[in-house]
Structure formats: structure tokens, C-alpha cells
Amino acid sequence: MNRISSQYNNMNTQYFLRQQEVRQAQKNAQVGSQSRITSLRDDPLAAGHLVRYQSFLSRVNVFEKNAQTLADNFQVREGYMHQNLEIMQRVRELAVQGANGINTPEDLKNMAVEVDELLKELVQNANAVGPDGNSLFAGTRNNVTAFEVSMGNVEGAAEPLITTVQYNGNIEGNKVEVDENAYLDVENSGNKVFWAEPQVYMGQRDLSAWQASTDSVIYVDGVNIEINAGDNIYSVAAKINNSGVAIRASIDPLSRGLNLRTTDAHQMWLADASGNVLEEIGMIKDKSQLPPYNIGNSVSVSGGSLFDSVIALRDAMYRGDHEVIGSRVLGVIDQGMSNLTTRLAKNGSDFERAQNNIQRQSLNNLNVTKLVSREGDIDMSEAITDLKMLDYVHQATLSNAGKMYSSTLLDYLR
Image (cartoon, rainbow, N blue to C red; front, top):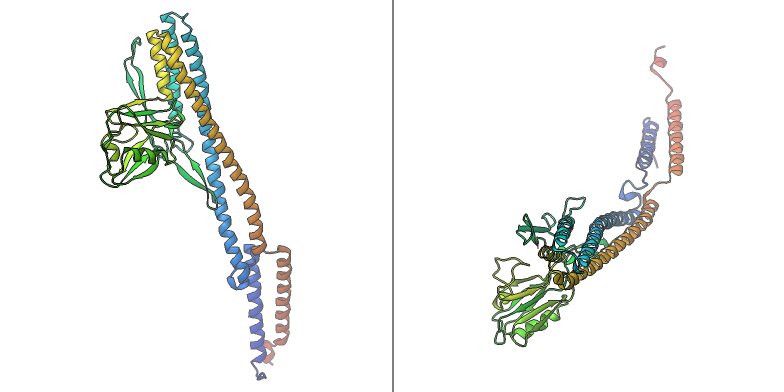
């Protein structure tokens, strides 16, 4: 039961006018933001769904961006690798011509000049940087020059030439998330891409009586291998073979030393993660020396890079050595081209996988955007109709209030 007073009509009118203004303000806010949910109380269930959908949509955008960045890097890297393969094809043609035995020493020297220029181009491509300014073939050490050259005198040459090419990067890779709990492995180690033949380490130290004194961890080609106290050299070899790395370990029957051989063309990477097992058995120097150039003085090393094969060809041409060109050098060049082709195919498959992830995330983006729109977007035609109706009601209320209080100050001046 309401109490009727002289202020009742005025207060009642003011109350409902304020309510209409609040509804108009809410509708205007929805139209302005194009969202029907301006606060959680508008639709708690839809608001909960909307938050989850928007969170997933932001992750989808990140996944798509990651995959696109990877695809761009793979594409740039493929261009340099393909160009190096073409350079190596020309190097092989020169090697075949130099091995036929009909060229004079002067002809071979003239051919060596072209081989040296091709070598410089190979090194330049291997030291290429991507659009982001990072080295393409230095592993995760992408702020350094991947390969460092050393100049020296070469028999038959009139000026200093490239004598060695050493790798400055590392063998670490990155895992880039391209979907929920799905990652693409990114590996761009130059000592794998530009290697020519399997590498072999032959230890000359007799290890038949050796045993590990403490628990240690050795680092072999990016994998940590635990060595327990009391393990002998046969146990170490077995653990390396069972670790999954592309290296086969064996014990030399004559020297009783540890032999390591890669199962594909790449440079081996050895270090003591904890303890000093590899140092004790003579495979590496002390920890002040970093891989891959920390190999012990008593270890015999064979197997070189793509650059080593081209350097060997150039030097043999300067010496006029047909036999070396036609046997050892030509064989290593073929192995290097085969490995480069394999790495190029791997890069291409990684690019295709990145492209597939881009397409999937683009489709996910459309689907999730549709869900966000369904839960949060406002129906503009319906909202405008409601807004017009609220404005009409507001104007009608003001009109009625004006008629109700039509008296003015002039009515009292009689």
C-alpha cells in the first residue's frame, strides 16, 4: 500500500525517468562497443564462455604468427642452401675436368682461381643472416658469424688464400609452439648443413683398465649421458650407442682406445657436462676448451666439411695433382653434395609443415572468431530498434510529466 502525498507523483516520475535513462545508457554502451556484454551481470554464462574463447583466440594468433615466422626463415634458408648446391655442382664439374689428366699444370692453376672464388661464395652464403638480422646457420648463437675463415699461404698461389673454415655456432635447437602442446623443432646448425662426410675420432689411449671414479655426465651431440661410478670403457661405449645420438662407439681391438664415428655427415660435439670422464679418457682437452675444437691431442680425427673438400680441390689444382683430384677429393665432394641435398630436403619438409600449421591456425582463427561473435557480439538491428523504442518511451514520459506539471510562475501572478 503506497502513501499518497503531494510529492508522490513527482518522485514516482523521477524514479522511472532515471530507470529509462539507465536502460538507454546500457543500450548505447552496447551499440558503441558492439558487444552485448558490458559487465558480467549481463549474461554470466556467456561471459564465462567469451573469456575462454577470447583467450584461445589470442593463443591461436600467436601460434599462427610463430608458424609464419618459421616458414619465412625456412624459405630464406632454403634459398641460400639451394644456391650453395648449385655452386657445388660447378665445383664438381671443375673437379671432373681437373681429374682427366689432359690439363697442363698451368690450366689447373687457372681452374684453381675459379674454385677459390666459389669457395668464397660458399662461405658468404654460409654466413648469411636472415631478415631479422640473425645468422641463419649458427644454431642458437644467432648473433655471431657462423663460420670463421683463416688465411694462409698455399703452394702455387701468389697471395694468401683461405686455408681453414671453422664453425663458431652451436648445435642447440629451439622448440617453437605452433599449436596446443605441439612444437616444431628448429635446428639450423651449420656444422651439419655444410658437412661433407662422417667424422671419426680414434682414441689412442689404452683404456682397458679405466673405470669412472665418480658419477658424471657427458654431453654428446646435444644429449646428456649419465656415467656411474665404476663404469668401464665398454659401459661408456654402450651408453653412447643406446642414447639415440647419430654416433656409434666402439673399442679399438689393438689400441684399446675409444673410437667414435658419426652415422651421418656432421661434426661431432663432445663435452663434460659434469665430472671429467671425457678428459680422463683423453677424448677432449680440459674444460677451458670449448667444442667442437676441444679434441684431445692423442685423438686421430678424420672427416671434413664441405669447405674442406673445396679447399682440398683448390690446393690439389695448384699442385697439379691429378690423382688426388680424381680419387679422394672428388669422392668427398660427392658426399658433401649428397648431405647438402638431404639437409635441403629436410628444410623443405619443415617449411611444408610450417605452412600446414599456418593454414590450420588460420581456419581455427575463423572458427573461434565465430564463437566469440556468437557469445559476445550484439545484434545491431535489434539493438537499434530497442534504442529507438527506449527513446520513444522516454520522450512520452517527459511529455506526460510536462502535462502533469503544466503550472508556471505566471499562473500565480494574477
